[in-house]
Length: 210
Length: 210
Image (cartoon, rainbow over all chains, first blue to last red; front, side):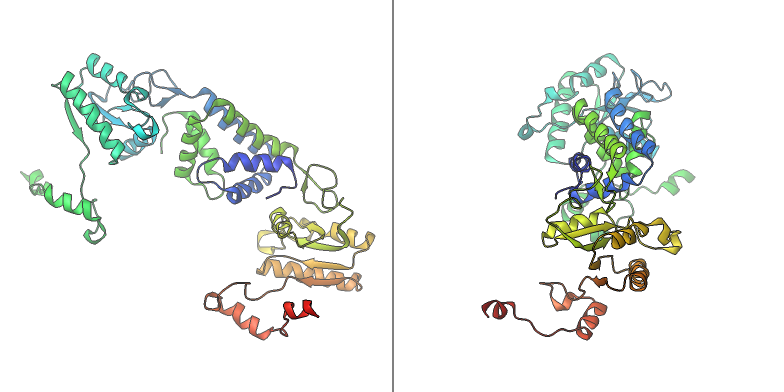
């Protein structure tokens, strides 16, 4: 595509370098921006640059933060003996949105992936063990994606914990059929494993009454 | 969604104000940008701001341009007596990409849409008639979208041309079944009209031989 203006061409190129945005979408975004007030577009450009320049990470859990220690780590009402290990900030947000987790986090910044040249030394694994050593941690929840790389990372970390800190419990998220999901739409592997890993029936209503 | 950093929140908000980009996509884009070098992200922000600040429009056809008169209008090898009226810059790009149109353009900047408060006075219609009056224009091609608003605009402009400049021919794009399209997938209205507006068979190969 040849653009009537170099300015447009540059802006379209910049947008189309973002993931999931092709040339046509980029052009649509650029034309949208041309209709906005100049100040709004300047504010857009400044916000993005500023975000990248001034972004900082929590010294403890490596989550994105405006302070040295993030609001989750510095919240004394949270359970300091429980650490949930996740891949990135998005997973922290997802778990925080459930409003049902009251422990701390540790953001690895990725998962072990030898094919991409990502070994344990490129992730925030050393600092996780520092935390386990210095803080009174009882339990580590491994909340990584159920992929090859995720499973490898869980295996690596849990093995090191078992060797060096045998008193620390390592747990993973429950896996099985989604709550509210219809059986006919569940994939075969999940369904087969959910049958193999079946659990005793717990009726929460009966439990509460007792 | 509550973000661990105001910087992230601001950037996500800015992205999610763009058309077709929701909060989740915005967050994905922001996390992508965090992985890019600072200079790249600064360049992104600057390109977008600069584009909006310095953008200019051709004084003649109102297309986006870096100069006072755009490269199409100032190209003397193009047919100066033929003007193609389009809605916006995207349509100019689409027609230019065919490499089969050698006339000039006129960008209206929208179509007449009383429901949205867009009357003829908000579009570049007056300047179109100025061009028709001053330049030796023979033909106006109305290349607007086949919507209610587009058809209204075509009707309005063609009526004014017929009243004031009866020597100027007004044409519209050919409508019918797409080239290479299979009949079974053509919508009923298009198919019905294509039968009603059928044309004498022209065999281009035979014509060329004669």
